[in-house]
Image (cartoon, rainbow, N blue to C red; front, side):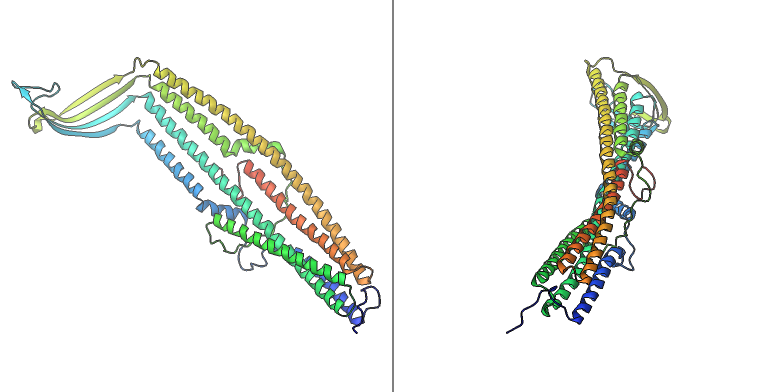
Length: 454
């Protein structure tokens, strides 16, 4: 008959079991600390770390929305050049030959000079006074400026998208490291408890609890790895790389500078936020459209200089000559169509002014909310660091009690689990602090790595 297994603390354990327990406690002390202190890029030694500014710069080179905005900006530039060219002289060629029926030697077509007519003219046209063309040129310039602001907004949107994916991957990388170190420590705990149980120095409850802790650590690690793979694929897609391409993340540190006050962020947003620039440019475009409509009631003076021939029959060399035409045109009456078009343009400008005030209010509300989130994240991080110190202190005391034989493996496992949660909370709150600071920069119209405002 097999001897009954004694409780772990119910009798004197063999000497080799006590030595094994001391070694186990030493490993439990070292392994979790190693999981916290391992640098972020240790697994990817030899490859440079992908910093946030570099990730944003890489995404801006390949993002479809950034390329679309660049194409529209170029289109606006060509439109502005075409608007300026409309105010310059235009040179054209007119050439043709006409035949018309005659009756009694006279052409039936009133404008014809004869039964046959040859025209060959080199025509130079110059708008001497054309308010409408000048308004159209200004409208093209304002649209070009609007396209630049829209390009800045598109780049800012890409930067915000990349920042979210980058911080998500950084957080999951930290969680994977912590879960791996936890799995190593609880695996050693389980193996040691299993050996002690085999010689009757540990209770069956200790063995079951350590097995459950190892299963939970394995499950947590598998979930973190799956989430990390998904986050890596998302970031690689934004960078136009292979979905499974490795990414080395740099180590994150708390912000070294204090958080600027909320009014400073609002002032930065007034100067650099592309949404406000777009609203202002839209108002300018509306003004230019209203001036274009108003200019249609003003007179237009045009000068034409022609050189060539316009004669019946077959021309000869001495038929060449000059012709100068100076003309003016001006609308008189259009049944109120001009007045209504002008009123429509002015009302649209008023609506754009209201839209700009709405955008400014929305930006201020967003900055107020994100500023509060940043303050809360900093406080949460400070509290998490304190809880980490307390959890480590409890873990050390529990480990000493385990070595002294006054506490069992379940007590040590519970303390180790509290330390695990504290480390996860520190990693999460640190990423939240960095994300909150980056989000405030995005709210103000800037992003990491931006060289100059557009």
